[in-house]
Image (tube, rainbow, N blue to C red):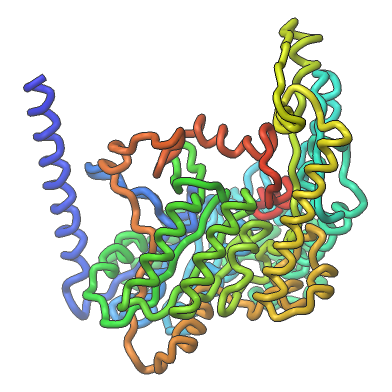
Length: 578
Protein backbone atom coordinates (compact mmCIF):
# COMPACT_ATOMS: atom_id res chain seq x y z
CA UNK A 1 0.00 0.00 0.00
CA UNK A 2 2.85 2.39 0.88
CA UNK A 3 4.57 1.62 -2.42
CA UNK A 4 1.34 2.34 -4.29
CA UNK A 5 0.88 5.64 -2.45
CA UNK A 6 4.50 6.59 -3.17
CA UNK A 7 4.07 5.67 -6.84
CA UNK A 8 0.94 7.84 -7.13
CA UNK A 9 2.68 10.75 -5.43
CA UNK A 10 5.68 10.54 -7.77
CA UNK A 11 3.38 10.18 -10.79
CA UNK A 12 1.38 13.26 -9.74
CA UNK A 13 4.51 15.37 -9.16
CA UNK A 14 5.94 14.26 -12.49
CA UNK A 15 2.70 15.19 -14.22
CA UNK A 16 2.71 18.65 -12.61
CA UNK A 17 6.38 19.15 -13.58
CA UNK A 18 5.74 18.18 -17.19
CA UNK A 19 2.66 20.40 -17.35
CA UNK A 20 4.66 23.36 -16.06
CA UNK A 21 7.45 22.61 -18.53
CA UNK A 22 4.89 22.49 -21.30
CA UNK A 23 3.53 25.92 -20.42
CA UNK A 24 7.08 27.33 -20.30
CA UNK A 25 7.94 25.86 -23.67
CA UNK A 26 4.68 27.16 -25.09
CA UNK A 27 5.38 30.70 -23.92
CA UNK A 28 8.91 30.77 -25.31
CA UNK A 29 8.07 30.87 -29.06
CA UNK A 30 5.36 33.47 -28.39
CA UNK A 31 7.47 35.75 -26.25
CA UNK A 32 9.90 37.19 -28.80
CA UNK A 33 8.21 40.36 -30.08
CA UNK A 34 8.56 41.08 -33.79
CA UNK A 35 9.00 37.49 -34.87
CA UNK A 36 6.49 36.50 -37.53
CA UNK A 37 4.52 33.31 -37.10
CA UNK A 38 2.08 31.22 -39.06
CA UNK A 39 -0.75 29.57 -37.16
CA UNK A 40 -1.72 26.01 -38.09
CA UNK A 41 -5.06 24.32 -37.61
CA UNK A 42 -5.66 20.61 -38.16
CA UNK A 43 -9.27 19.53 -38.39
CA UNK A 44 -9.14 15.74 -38.31
CA UNK A 45 -11.44 14.87 -35.39
CA UNK A 46 -14.90 15.83 -34.14
CA UNK A 47 -15.02 19.49 -33.12
CA UNK A 48 -16.77 19.94 -29.78
CA UNK A 49 -18.45 23.23 -28.95
CA UNK A 50 -16.46 23.70 -25.72
CA UNK A 51 -13.86 21.73 -23.77
CA UNK A 52 -15.52 20.21 -20.71
CA UNK A 53 -12.63 17.99 -19.59
CA UNK A 54 -9.01 18.95 -19.06
CA UNK A 55 -6.20 16.94 -20.56
CA UNK A 56 -4.28 14.00 -19.14
CA UNK A 57 -1.38 15.02 -16.89
CA UNK A 58 1.44 14.04 -19.25
CA UNK A 59 2.77 15.23 -22.64
CA UNK A 60 0.30 14.80 -25.46
CA UNK A 61 -2.60 14.70 -22.98
CA UNK A 62 -4.08 18.08 -23.92
CA UNK A 63 -7.82 18.10 -24.70
CA UNK A 64 -8.67 18.24 -28.40
CA UNK A 65 -9.42 21.53 -30.11
CA UNK A 66 -12.91 22.90 -29.50
CA UNK A 67 -14.81 25.63 -31.33
CA UNK A 68 -14.57 27.70 -28.15
CA UNK A 69 -10.77 27.43 -28.12
CA UNK A 70 -10.52 28.09 -31.86
CA UNK A 71 -12.65 31.21 -31.44
CA UNK A 72 -10.42 32.56 -28.68
CA UNK A 73 -7.30 31.97 -30.78
CA UNK A 74 -8.68 33.49 -33.95
CA UNK A 75 -10.01 36.48 -32.01
CA UNK A 76 -6.54 37.14 -30.56
CA UNK A 77 -4.82 36.56 -33.89
CA UNK A 78 -6.78 39.34 -35.60
CA UNK A 79 -4.94 42.03 -33.64
CA UNK A 80 -1.61 40.25 -33.09
CA UNK A 81 1.00 41.75 -35.39
CA UNK A 82 3.20 38.67 -34.94
CA UNK A 83 0.64 36.44 -36.67
CA UNK A 84 0.88 36.60 -40.45
CA UNK A 85 -1.60 33.93 -41.43
CA UNK A 86 -3.31 30.61 -40.85
CA UNK A 87 -2.76 27.27 -42.57
CA UNK A 88 -5.67 24.83 -42.29
CA UNK A 89 -5.16 21.12 -42.86
CA UNK A 90 -8.72 19.93 -43.32
CA UNK A 91 -9.37 16.19 -43.23
CA UNK A 92 -12.70 15.84 -41.47
CA UNK A 93 -15.48 18.30 -40.62
CA UNK A 94 -17.36 16.34 -37.96
CA UNK A 95 -19.78 19.03 -36.88
CA UNK A 96 -22.90 20.78 -38.10
CA UNK A 97 -23.53 23.42 -40.73
CA UNK A 98 -24.06 26.18 -38.16
CA UNK A 99 -20.63 25.55 -36.61
CA UNK A 100 -19.15 25.68 -40.11
CA UNK A 101 -20.81 29.06 -40.62
CA UNK A 102 -19.32 30.32 -37.36
CA UNK A 103 -15.85 29.15 -38.45
CA UNK A 104 -16.29 30.67 -41.93
CA UNK A 105 -17.15 34.00 -40.33
CA UNK A 106 -14.05 33.84 -38.12
CA UNK A 107 -11.85 33.03 -41.11
CA UNK A 108 -13.34 35.96 -43.02
CA UNK A 109 -12.62 38.27 -40.06
CA UNK A 110 -9.02 37.03 -39.97
CA UNK A 111 -8.62 37.73 -43.67
CA UNK A 112 -10.19 41.18 -43.24
CA UNK A 113 -7.51 41.85 -40.61
CA UNK A 114 -4.86 41.34 -43.28
CA UNK A 115 -3.87 37.76 -42.45
CA UNK A 116 -3.62 35.07 -45.11
CA UNK A 117 -5.78 31.94 -44.78
CA UNK A 118 -4.76 28.89 -46.83
CA UNK A 119 -6.42 25.49 -46.79
CA UNK A 120 -5.04 22.07 -47.68
CA UNK A 121 -7.39 19.21 -48.57
CA UNK A 122 -6.10 15.71 -49.11
CA UNK A 123 -9.65 15.10 -50.32
CA UNK A 124 -13.13 16.39 -49.59
CA UNK A 125 -14.75 13.05 -48.88
CA UNK A 126 -13.10 9.72 -49.68
CA UNK A 127 -15.94 7.30 -50.19
CA UNK A 128 -18.16 9.74 -48.29
CA UNK A 129 -19.97 13.04 -48.63
CA UNK A 130 -17.45 15.89 -48.53
CA UNK A 131 -19.91 18.77 -48.84
CA UNK A 132 -19.26 20.21 -45.38
CA UNK A 133 -15.47 19.92 -45.73
CA UNK A 134 -15.54 21.80 -49.01
CA UNK A 135 -18.00 24.38 -47.67
CA UNK A 136 -15.61 25.23 -44.84
CA UNK A 137 -12.55 25.20 -47.11
CA UNK A 138 -14.22 27.66 -49.48
CA UNK A 139 -13.87 30.40 -46.85
CA UNK A 140 -10.07 30.26 -47.25
CA UNK A 141 -8.11 32.56 -49.54
CA UNK A 142 -6.67 29.59 -51.40
CA UNK A 143 -7.60 25.90 -51.54
CA UNK A 144 -4.99 23.26 -52.34
CA UNK A 145 -5.97 19.67 -53.15
CA UNK A 146 -3.86 16.52 -53.31
CA UNK A 147 -3.34 15.45 -56.96
CA UNK A 148 -5.14 12.13 -56.30
CA UNK A 149 -7.87 13.70 -54.17
CA UNK A 150 -11.46 14.47 -55.11
CA UNK A 151 -14.24 16.88 -54.26
CA UNK A 152 -17.36 14.98 -53.23
CA UNK A 153 -19.70 17.97 -53.24
CA UNK A 154 -22.70 15.66 -53.18
CA UNK A 155 -25.31 17.85 -51.45
CA UNK A 156 -27.42 17.03 -48.40
CA UNK A 157 -29.10 13.88 -47.15
CA UNK A 158 -31.53 13.56 -44.22
CA UNK A 159 -32.25 10.07 -42.98
CA UNK A 160 -33.58 8.44 -39.83
CA UNK A 161 -34.36 4.83 -38.94
CA UNK A 162 -37.95 3.72 -38.40
CA UNK A 163 -38.23 0.85 -35.95
CA UNK A 164 -41.95 0.03 -36.16
CA UNK A 165 -41.42 -3.08 -38.30
CA UNK A 166 -38.79 -4.46 -35.92
CA UNK A 167 -40.91 -3.64 -32.87
CA UNK A 168 -43.89 -5.47 -34.37
CA UNK A 169 -41.76 -8.57 -34.92
CA UNK A 170 -40.52 -8.35 -31.36
CA UNK A 171 -44.06 -7.78 -30.05
CA UNK A 172 -43.01 -4.49 -28.47
CA UNK A 173 -45.86 -1.98 -28.46
CA UNK A 174 -45.05 1.75 -28.83
CA UNK A 175 -47.36 4.13 -27.01
CA UNK A 176 -46.67 7.84 -27.65
CA UNK A 177 -48.49 11.15 -27.43
CA UNK A 178 -47.49 14.54 -28.81
CA UNK A 179 -48.53 18.16 -28.55
CA UNK A 180 -48.08 19.52 -32.05
CA UNK A 181 -48.55 17.89 -35.44
CA UNK A 182 -44.88 18.45 -36.33
CA UNK A 183 -43.49 16.93 -33.13
CA UNK A 184 -42.36 13.71 -34.74
CA UNK A 185 -39.69 12.39 -32.36
CA UNK A 186 -41.86 9.36 -31.53
CA UNK A 187 -42.47 8.46 -35.18
CA UNK A 188 -39.32 6.34 -35.32
CA UNK A 189 -41.19 3.94 -33.01
CA UNK A 190 -44.76 4.33 -34.28
CA UNK A 191 -44.39 4.72 -38.07
CA UNK A 192 -42.56 3.15 -40.97
CA UNK A 193 -41.93 6.46 -42.81
CA UNK A 194 -42.19 10.20 -42.29
CA UNK A 195 -45.64 11.63 -41.61
CA UNK A 196 -46.81 14.39 -44.00
CA UNK A 197 -46.10 17.03 -41.33
CA UNK A 198 -42.59 15.74 -40.65
CA UNK A 199 -41.89 15.54 -44.36
CA UNK A 200 -43.00 19.15 -44.82
CA UNK A 201 -40.68 20.37 -42.06
CA UNK A 202 -37.71 18.32 -43.30
CA UNK A 203 -38.16 19.49 -46.88
CA UNK A 204 -38.13 23.09 -45.68
CA UNK A 205 -34.94 22.50 -43.70
CA UNK A 206 -33.19 20.84 -46.63
CA UNK A 207 -34.23 23.62 -49.01
CA UNK A 208 -33.01 26.26 -46.57
CA UNK A 209 -29.67 24.59 -45.89
CA UNK A 210 -29.03 23.80 -49.55
CA UNK A 211 -29.82 27.36 -50.57
CA UNK A 212 -27.37 28.69 -47.98
CA UNK A 213 -24.63 26.32 -49.14
CA UNK A 214 -25.06 27.22 -52.80
CA UNK A 215 -25.19 30.96 -52.10
CA UNK A 216 -22.08 30.95 -49.89
CA UNK A 217 -20.05 28.72 -52.22
CA UNK A 218 -20.93 30.93 -55.17
CA UNK A 219 -19.82 34.06 -53.29
CA UNK A 220 -16.59 32.46 -52.04
CA UNK A 221 -15.53 31.11 -55.41
CA UNK A 222 -16.81 34.03 -57.51
CA UNK A 223 -19.31 31.92 -59.47
CA UNK A 224 -22.98 32.07 -60.32
CA UNK A 225 -25.27 29.95 -58.16
CA UNK A 226 -26.30 27.94 -61.22
CA UNK A 227 -22.65 26.96 -61.69
CA UNK A 228 -22.40 25.73 -58.10
CA UNK A 229 -25.57 23.68 -58.50
CA UNK A 230 -24.02 22.10 -61.60
CA UNK A 231 -20.95 21.19 -59.53
CA UNK A 232 -23.16 19.41 -57.02
CA UNK A 233 -25.02 17.46 -59.70
CA UNK A 234 -21.75 16.54 -61.43
CA UNK A 235 -19.88 15.45 -58.27
CA UNK A 236 -17.83 13.54 -57.30
CA UNK A 237 -15.11 15.49 -59.10
CA UNK A 238 -11.51 14.39 -59.61
CA UNK A 239 -8.69 16.72 -58.67
CA UNK A 240 -8.10 17.66 -62.30
CA UNK A 241 -11.82 18.39 -62.80
CA UNK A 242 -11.99 20.43 -59.59
CA UNK A 243 -9.04 22.55 -60.72
CA UNK A 244 -10.41 23.07 -64.21
CA UNK A 245 -13.86 24.05 -62.92
CA UNK A 246 -12.48 26.47 -60.34
CA UNK A 247 -13.35 24.62 -57.14
CA UNK A 248 -9.69 24.62 -56.02
CA UNK A 249 -6.68 26.82 -56.74
CA UNK A 250 -3.76 24.41 -56.70
CA UNK A 251 -2.97 20.71 -56.92
CA UNK A 252 -0.02 19.89 -54.68
CA UNK A 253 1.26 17.40 -52.16
CA UNK A 254 1.40 18.28 -48.43
CA UNK A 255 5.16 18.86 -48.51
CA UNK A 256 4.77 21.27 -51.43
CA UNK A 257 2.02 23.14 -49.57
CA UNK A 258 4.19 23.44 -46.44
CA UNK A 259 7.25 24.53 -48.43
CA UNK A 260 5.26 27.24 -50.19
CA UNK A 261 3.94 28.62 -46.92
CA UNK A 262 7.36 28.49 -45.26
CA UNK A 263 8.75 30.52 -48.14
CA UNK A 264 6.03 33.12 -47.66
CA UNK A 265 5.84 33.16 -43.84
CA UNK A 266 9.07 31.68 -42.55
CA UNK A 267 9.52 28.52 -40.53
CA UNK A 268 8.07 29.77 -37.23
CA UNK A 269 4.75 27.98 -36.84
CA UNK A 270 2.50 27.38 -33.85
CA UNK A 271 -0.74 25.44 -33.61
CA UNK A 272 -3.90 27.47 -33.15
CA UNK A 273 -4.74 25.45 -30.02
CA UNK A 274 -1.39 26.24 -28.35
CA UNK A 275 -1.64 29.89 -29.37
CA UNK A 276 -5.17 30.15 -27.95
CA UNK A 277 -4.18 28.55 -24.63
CA UNK A 278 -1.23 30.95 -24.31
CA UNK A 279 -3.45 33.92 -25.14
CA UNK A 280 -5.91 32.84 -22.43
CA UNK A 281 -3.37 33.59 -19.68
CA UNK A 282 -3.49 37.38 -19.98
CA UNK A 283 -4.64 39.33 -16.90
CA UNK A 284 -8.42 39.91 -17.02
CA UNK A 285 -9.97 43.37 -17.22
CA UNK A 286 -12.08 44.74 -14.37
CA UNK A 287 -15.27 44.07 -16.32
CA UNK A 288 -16.00 40.72 -17.90
CA UNK A 289 -18.54 39.24 -20.30
CA UNK A 290 -19.20 35.59 -19.48
CA UNK A 291 -19.73 33.05 -22.25
CA UNK A 292 -21.61 30.15 -20.67
CA UNK A 293 -22.05 26.95 -22.67
CA UNK A 294 -25.35 25.03 -22.45
CA UNK A 295 -24.50 21.76 -24.18
CA UNK A 296 -26.18 18.38 -24.56
CA UNK A 297 -29.43 16.69 -23.59
CA UNK A 298 -31.26 18.55 -20.82
CA UNK A 299 -31.98 16.43 -17.74
CA UNK A 300 -32.47 16.92 -14.04
CA UNK A 301 -29.50 16.58 -11.73
CA UNK A 302 -25.82 16.97 -12.52
CA UNK A 303 -24.14 17.95 -15.77
CA UNK A 304 -21.34 15.89 -17.23
CA UNK A 305 -19.62 14.35 -20.19
CA UNK A 306 -17.78 11.14 -20.86
CA UNK A 307 -14.18 11.56 -22.07
CA UNK A 308 -14.52 8.17 -23.77
CA UNK A 309 -17.83 8.46 -25.64
CA UNK A 310 -18.07 12.24 -25.92
CA UNK A 311 -21.71 12.18 -24.78
CA UNK A 312 -22.80 15.32 -22.93
CA UNK A 313 -25.60 15.98 -20.45
CA UNK A 314 -26.82 19.41 -19.37
CA UNK A 315 -28.01 18.90 -15.80
CA UNK A 316 -30.50 21.42 -14.42
CA UNK A 317 -29.03 21.38 -10.92
CA UNK A 318 -25.45 22.11 -11.93
CA UNK A 319 -26.34 24.54 -14.70
CA UNK A 320 -28.74 26.51 -12.49
CA UNK A 321 -25.96 26.83 -9.93
CA UNK A 322 -23.65 28.29 -12.57
CA UNK A 323 -26.30 30.84 -13.58
CA UNK A 324 -26.70 31.87 -9.95
CA UNK A 325 -22.92 32.25 -9.51
CA UNK A 326 -22.66 34.46 -12.60
CA UNK A 327 -25.47 36.62 -11.28
CA UNK A 328 -23.67 37.10 -7.97
CA UNK A 329 -20.27 37.86 -9.57
CA UNK A 330 -20.04 41.67 -9.75
CA UNK A 331 -17.19 41.51 -12.28
CA UNK A 332 -19.53 39.87 -14.80
CA UNK A 333 -21.46 42.63 -16.56
CA UNK A 334 -23.32 40.45 -19.08
CA UNK A 335 -23.72 36.81 -20.04
CA UNK A 336 -23.73 35.16 -23.45
CA UNK A 337 -25.53 31.83 -23.23
CA UNK A 338 -24.16 29.61 -26.00
CA UNK A 339 -26.73 26.87 -26.65
CA UNK A 340 -26.14 23.60 -28.50
CA UNK A 341 -28.90 21.31 -27.25
CA UNK A 342 -31.66 19.20 -28.81
CA UNK A 343 -33.82 19.42 -25.68
CA UNK A 344 -34.81 16.84 -23.10
CA UNK A 345 -36.78 16.99 -19.87
CA UNK A 346 -39.56 19.58 -19.74
CA UNK A 347 -39.13 20.01 -16.00
CA UNK A 348 -35.36 20.42 -16.21
CA UNK A 349 -35.78 22.98 -19.00
CA UNK A 350 -38.27 24.94 -16.90
CA UNK A 351 -35.94 24.95 -13.89
CA UNK A 352 -33.12 26.33 -16.03
CA UNK A 353 -35.37 28.96 -17.61
CA UNK A 354 -36.31 30.18 -14.13
CA UNK A 355 -32.64 30.90 -13.37
CA UNK A 356 -32.15 32.52 -16.79
CA UNK A 357 -35.00 34.90 -15.92
CA UNK A 358 -33.52 35.66 -12.50
CA UNK A 359 -30.10 36.31 -14.05
CA UNK A 360 -31.63 38.54 -16.72
CA UNK A 361 -33.17 40.68 -13.95
CA UNK A 362 -29.62 41.49 -12.77
CA UNK A 363 -27.67 41.72 -16.05
CA UNK A 364 -28.20 41.16 -19.80
CA UNK A 365 -28.40 37.58 -21.08
CA UNK A 366 -27.85 37.15 -24.82
CA UNK A 367 -28.30 33.72 -26.39
CA UNK A 368 -25.99 32.53 -29.16
CA UNK A 369 -27.29 29.43 -30.91
CA UNK A 370 -24.94 26.84 -32.41
CA UNK A 371 -25.94 23.79 -34.49
CA UNK A 372 -29.10 23.01 -32.51
CA UNK A 373 -31.14 25.04 -30.04
CA UNK A 374 -34.46 23.29 -30.41
CA UNK A 375 -37.27 22.07 -28.19
CA UNK A 376 -35.87 22.29 -24.64
CA UNK A 377 -32.85 24.08 -26.16
CA UNK A 378 -35.21 26.81 -27.37
CA UNK A 379 -37.23 26.70 -24.14
CA UNK A 380 -34.25 27.82 -22.03
CA UNK A 381 -33.48 30.62 -24.53
CA UNK A 382 -36.99 32.00 -25.01
CA UNK A 383 -36.79 34.77 -22.38
CA UNK A 384 -33.27 36.01 -23.03
CA UNK A 385 -32.52 39.69 -23.62
CA UNK A 386 -31.67 38.90 -27.26
CA UNK A 387 -31.34 35.72 -29.34
CA UNK A 388 -28.71 35.36 -32.07
CA UNK A 389 -28.62 32.32 -34.36
CA UNK A 390 -26.69 31.13 -37.37
CA UNK A 391 -28.68 30.84 -40.57
CA UNK A 392 -28.28 27.06 -40.38
CA UNK A 393 -29.13 26.71 -36.68
CA UNK A 394 -31.93 24.19 -36.11
CA UNK A 395 -34.32 25.82 -33.68
CA UNK A 396 -37.96 26.02 -32.67
CA UNK A 397 -39.53 22.58 -32.18
CA UNK A 398 -41.97 24.15 -29.72
CA UNK A 399 -43.92 21.07 -28.74
CA UNK A 400 -44.02 18.09 -26.40
CA UNK A 401 -43.69 14.33 -26.85
CA UNK A 402 -43.92 11.55 -24.30
CA UNK A 403 -44.42 7.82 -24.39
CA UNK A 404 -43.07 4.39 -23.73
CA UNK A 405 -42.29 1.06 -25.34
CA UNK A 406 -44.42 -1.67 -23.76
CA UNK A 407 -42.40 -4.89 -23.54
CA UNK A 408 -44.91 -7.16 -21.77
CA UNK A 409 -45.78 -9.25 -24.84
CA UNK A 410 -42.10 -9.43 -25.84
CA UNK A 411 -41.20 -10.81 -22.42
CA UNK A 412 -44.08 -13.25 -22.16
CA UNK A 413 -44.55 -14.53 -25.73
CA UNK A 414 -40.90 -14.58 -26.86
CA UNK A 415 -38.91 -14.96 -23.65
CA UNK A 416 -41.38 -16.80 -21.47
CA UNK A 417 -41.16 -14.20 -18.71
CA UNK A 418 -44.42 -13.59 -16.88
CA UNK A 419 -45.44 -10.86 -14.44
CA UNK A 420 -48.14 -10.75 -11.80
CA UNK A 421 -48.31 -7.06 -10.78
CA UNK A 422 -50.13 -5.99 -7.62
CA UNK A 423 -51.62 -2.48 -7.68
CA UNK A 424 -52.79 0.09 -5.21
CA UNK A 425 -54.06 3.26 -6.89
CA UNK A 426 -55.82 3.80 -10.19
CA UNK A 427 -52.68 5.08 -11.94
CA UNK A 428 -50.09 2.80 -10.36
CA UNK A 429 -49.27 1.26 -13.77
CA UNK A 430 -49.12 4.55 -15.67
CA UNK A 431 -45.36 4.41 -16.21
CA UNK A 432 -45.01 0.64 -16.26
CA UNK A 433 -43.32 -0.64 -19.40
CA UNK A 434 -45.32 -3.88 -19.41
CA UNK A 435 -48.42 -2.57 -21.19
CA UNK A 436 -49.26 0.36 -23.48
CA UNK A 437 -51.44 3.16 -22.15
CA UNK A 438 -55.12 2.29 -21.85
CA UNK A 439 -57.85 4.85 -22.57
CA UNK A 440 -57.87 6.26 -19.07
CA UNK A 441 -54.09 6.55 -18.98
CA UNK A 442 -54.05 8.20 -22.39
CA UNK A 443 -56.45 10.82 -21.07
CA UNK A 444 -54.21 11.45 -18.05
CA UNK A 445 -51.11 11.77 -20.23
CA UNK A 446 -52.91 13.98 -22.73
CA UNK A 447 -53.93 16.38 -19.97
CA UNK A 448 -50.38 16.66 -18.67
CA UNK A 449 -48.81 17.09 -22.10
CA UNK A 450 -51.31 19.80 -23.02
CA UNK A 451 -50.49 21.62 -19.76
CA UNK A 452 -46.76 21.51 -20.53
CA UNK A 453 -47.34 22.64 -24.09
CA UNK A 454 -49.45 25.58 -22.91
CA UNK A 455 -46.69 26.58 -20.51
CA UNK A 456 -44.16 26.39 -23.35
CA UNK A 457 -46.34 28.62 -25.56
CA UNK A 458 -46.80 31.15 -22.76
CA UNK A 459 -43.05 31.36 -22.13
CA UNK A 460 -42.30 31.96 -25.80
CA UNK A 461 -45.07 34.56 -26.15
CA UNK A 462 -43.83 36.44 -23.08
CA UNK A 463 -40.15 36.17 -23.97
CA UNK A 464 -40.49 37.10 -27.61
CA UNK A 465 -43.19 39.74 -27.21
CA UNK A 466 -45.58 37.87 -29.50
CA UNK A 467 -49.28 37.19 -29.29
CA UNK A 468 -49.98 33.67 -28.08
CA UNK A 469 -52.01 33.01 -31.21
CA UNK A 470 -48.98 33.95 -33.31
CA UNK A 471 -46.77 31.59 -31.33
CA UNK A 472 -49.26 28.78 -31.88
CA UNK A 473 -48.86 29.17 -35.65
CA UNK A 474 -45.06 28.88 -35.26
CA UNK A 475 -45.15 26.01 -32.78
CA UNK A 476 -46.74 22.60 -33.17
CA UNK A 477 -43.30 21.05 -32.81
CA UNK A 478 -42.07 22.44 -36.13
CA UNK A 479 -38.35 23.05 -36.53
CA UNK A 480 -36.98 26.09 -38.34
CA UNK A 481 -33.66 27.15 -39.74
CA UNK A 482 -32.15 30.15 -37.99
CA UNK A 483 -32.95 32.25 -41.05
CA UNK A 484 -36.62 31.22 -41.01
CA UNK A 485 -36.80 31.71 -37.22
CA UNK A 486 -35.45 35.25 -37.65
CA UNK A 487 -38.11 36.02 -40.26
CA UNK A 488 -40.82 34.84 -37.84
CA UNK A 489 -39.64 36.61 -34.70
CA UNK A 490 -38.30 33.58 -32.84
CA UNK A 491 -34.76 34.93 -33.24
CA UNK A 492 -33.56 38.56 -33.15
CA UNK A 493 -30.46 38.50 -35.34
CA UNK A 494 -28.37 36.26 -37.59
CA UNK A 495 -24.76 35.95 -36.50
CA UNK A 496 -22.32 34.13 -34.29
CA UNK A 497 -20.41 34.68 -31.07
CA UNK A 498 -18.97 38.02 -32.18
CA UNK A 499 -22.43 39.49 -32.68
CA UNK A 500 -23.82 38.00 -29.46
CA UNK A 501 -20.91 39.42 -27.46
CA UNK A 502 -21.36 42.83 -29.10
CA UNK A 503 -25.06 42.83 -28.20
CA UNK A 504 -24.24 41.81 -24.62
CA UNK A 505 -21.75 44.70 -24.29
CA UNK A 506 -24.27 47.10 -25.75
CA UNK A 507 -27.04 45.95 -23.41
CA UNK A 508 -24.68 46.33 -20.45
CA UNK A 509 -23.85 49.92 -21.44
CA UNK A 510 -20.20 49.17 -22.25
CA UNK A 511 -18.65 51.70 -24.62
CA UNK A 512 -17.09 50.24 -27.81
CA UNK A 513 -13.68 51.59 -26.77
CA UNK A 514 -13.81 50.16 -23.24
CA UNK A 515 -11.75 47.03 -22.56
CA UNK A 516 -13.75 44.02 -21.42
CA UNK A 517 -12.45 40.49 -20.85
CA UNK A 518 -14.20 37.35 -22.03
CA UNK A 519 -14.61 34.57 -19.48
CA UNK A 520 -15.64 31.14 -20.75
CA UNK A 521 -17.65 28.73 -18.58
CA UNK A 522 -17.80 26.02 -17.41
CA UNK A 523 -14.13 25.64 -16.73
CA UNK A 524 -12.83 22.24 -17.88
CA UNK A 525 -12.85 19.51 -15.25
CA UNK A 526 -9.28 18.35 -14.67
CA UNK A 527 -8.33 14.73 -15.18
CA UNK A 528 -7.79 14.23 -11.46
CA UNK A 529 -11.12 15.84 -10.58
CA UNK A 530 -12.82 13.57 -13.08
CA UNK A 531 -11.22 10.50 -11.50
CA UNK A 532 -12.46 11.61 -8.08
CA UNK A 533 -16.10 11.89 -9.21
CA UNK A 534 -18.51 9.62 -7.38
CA UNK A 535 -22.13 8.83 -8.22
CA UNK A 536 -24.65 10.76 -6.15
CA UNK A 537 -28.39 10.19 -5.94
CA UNK A 538 -28.10 7.44 -8.51
CA UNK A 539 -26.42 9.74 -11.05
CA UNK A 540 -22.87 10.56 -11.99
CA UNK A 541 -22.58 14.15 -10.87
CA UNK A 542 -20.08 15.51 -13.38
CA UNK A 543 -19.03 12.80 -15.77
CA UNK A 544 -21.62 10.14 -16.61
CA UNK A 545 -20.18 7.06 -18.24
CA UNK A 546 -21.86 5.79 -21.42
CA UNK A 547 -23.93 3.17 -19.61
CA UNK A 548 -25.29 5.64 -17.06
CA UNK A 549 -25.85 8.25 -19.77
CA UNK A 550 -27.84 5.78 -21.85
CA UNK A 551 -29.99 5.00 -18.85
CA UNK A 552 -30.65 8.66 -18.22
CA UNK A 553 -31.45 9.45 -21.84
CA UNK A 554 -33.77 6.44 -22.13
CA UNK A 555 -36.00 7.64 -19.31
CA UNK A 556 -37.97 9.80 -21.72
CA UNK A 557 -38.94 6.80 -23.84
CA UNK A 558 -38.98 3.77 -21.59
CA UNK A 559 -40.17 5.33 -18.34
CA UNK A 560 -41.71 8.59 -19.51
CA UNK A 561 -41.99 11.74 -17.51
CA UNK A 562 -45.20 13.69 -18.18
CA UNK A 563 -43.56 15.39 -21.14
CA UNK A 564 -40.26 15.60 -23.00
CA UNK A 565 -38.97 18.38 -25.22
CA UNK A 566 -36.96 16.33 -27.71
CA UNK A 567 -35.58 16.83 -31.19
CA UNK A 568 -36.72 14.56 -33.98
CA UNK A 569 -34.09 11.97 -35.09
CA UNK A 570 -34.24 12.92 -38.78
CA UNK A 571 -33.68 16.56 -37.89
CA UNK A 572 -30.74 15.63 -35.67
CA UNK A 573 -29.10 13.88 -38.62
CA UNK A 574 -29.34 17.12 -40.59
CA UNK A 575 -27.61 19.06 -37.83
CA UNK A 576 -24.44 17.04 -38.39
CA UNK A 577 -24.36 16.03 -42.06
CA UNK A 578 -22.09 13.17 -43.03
